[in-house]
Image (cartoon, rainbow, N blue to C red; front, side, top):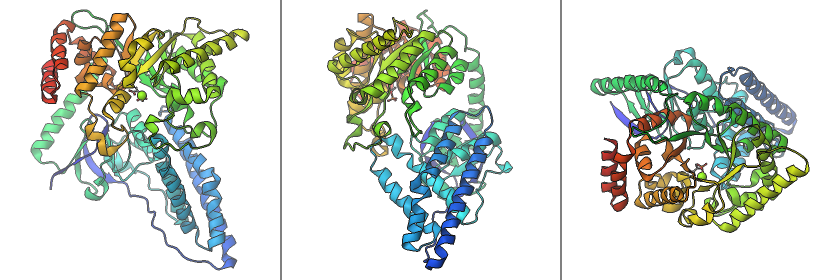
Length: 572
Ligand code: PEP
Ligand code: MG
C-alpha cells in the first residue's frame, strides 16, 4: 500500500531506492542483583566494555577517508570525549558497587541521570548533544551484551537508510558505501546528523517520527529531500513522475556548474554579490567550488563547540588566518561569537527561562569581555593576511554598539603596543536580526561600516516564534507582511544612506525569494554554498526594473494570499 510520510527536509534532491532498516539500538536491558563477591568481576567487565568501545571509535576515526568532511573527525572526538568522561566511565562503577547491580543496568541508570540534566539545558545546540550521549551508551551496551555494531553492509550501495536515529559514525560509512539517501525519525535542524547530512549533499529527511516503524526492509521508497516527503511503495505513475524529476534535478545540477565563473549580474546589468556562509575553516573548499565572491558569514562559534577547553588567541588566529588566506583576497566576514548559553565559557550553567531572549551573542561577549577580547585580537591579527571584516551579532541598542566598538579599539591598541600588525582599516558591521535594530537603523548606520540582515532571527523575534521549537514551526513565515516590511525597510534605508547591506539568513539562499529581494534593492546575498549557483541562475534570469513593480505591490498588501500570488507572478 502506498503512503506518504512528512518530515523536515535537510538536504535537497530526489532519491529512489530500496529501504534498508538500520536496527534501533537496544536500550532495554535486564536488571539483576549480584552477590558482593562478584562485584569486582562485574566492574572489570564494565571497564573492558568501555575499553573495547574506545578501540572501536579510534579504529573508526582511523578509517575516515581523507576527503571526508572535517566534521566526521570532530564527531568521533566528541564521542571519545563523552566516553572518557568520568560521568560515563566511573560513575556506573560506583553504581555497581553501591547497588550490587549488573553493569548494563548501572550504565542505563547513569544515562537516565545525564539525560535529565541535559533536559534542563536551555541552549538547543547543547541539548541536542543528548543524542551523542545516547549513541555512546548504545555502543558500550552492545559490547556488554556481546553484540557487534551493526554496520551498513555492501548491499546498502544505492539503497536508502531508514533509522530511528543515525550517529555521525554511521554516516561516515554511508559516504563510503554511497548510499543514495537517508531518513531518520529523530533529529533537529542543528543536530550533528543534520549538519553532516548537509555536507554529504545527498537527499535526507529528519524528524519523520514513525518512519522506522512504518517502513519495512526492502520497501521501495522515493525521498524528496527538498519537500521533506517520503513516498513509500509508490504506484507506477508516481514512480515515473519522480524518475523524470530526478533526471531533471541531476541535469540541472550539472548545468549549474557552467555558470560558476559567469559574472553575477541581472539581465539589465546590475551586479549582485553572492557570498557564502560557513561554519568551519574546512568549508572553504566548498565555497571555492561554488564560485562565491567571498564569505559573508563565518559562524565562528562553531570553533568553540565540541571541545573541553576554549580555543586560545593563537589557535583562533590560525583558524581565521587559514580561511582568509585560502580565500585569496576575497572578503571574509567573521561573525564574533554567537553562543546562546555560557556553559562552555566558564563551566557554569546560567538557567534562563527564555534563552533566545537571554544572554546570547554580543550580550554574552560583553558579559565575558576577556573571552571577547581574545577573539577580537585573534580576528584583528588575521586581518593582516587578506580582506577581513568583523560582524557583530544580535545588536539591539546603541550602548551595546558603543561598548563593542570600544573593545575593538582597545584590542587594536593592545596590538599596537606589541607591534603586531593588523589591517587598520578593518571594517566593522552589525547584524540586523532584532526588530529594534531594524526600526532604529540610523543609530547603527552612523557607526557601522556595513549591515547584514539575519532573517532567521529577525523572523523569530518579529513573529515571536522560537525557531527551534517544532510545535510552532508551521507559523514561522518569511513571507509574513511584518517580516517583508522590516527587510525591505532595512535594505532601502541602508541603500539611501550608502551603507552596504547584505542578507545572510536562510532567505538569501532560497531561490524563490531572490527576485523579491532584488526588488527590495538587495545587491548582496550570503548563503550556504550548496545554494549559491541556484540563486545565481535566478539572478542571471532577472531584470531589476521588471521585478521592482511587483515587489512594491507585495509591500502594499497585508493579505498572505495576495503576497503569495504576487510572489508566484514574480517567479513566473
Ligand atoms: C540569522 O539569524 O539569520 C543568521 C544568519 O544567524 P544564525 O542563523 O546563525 O542565528
Ligand atoms: Mg542569527
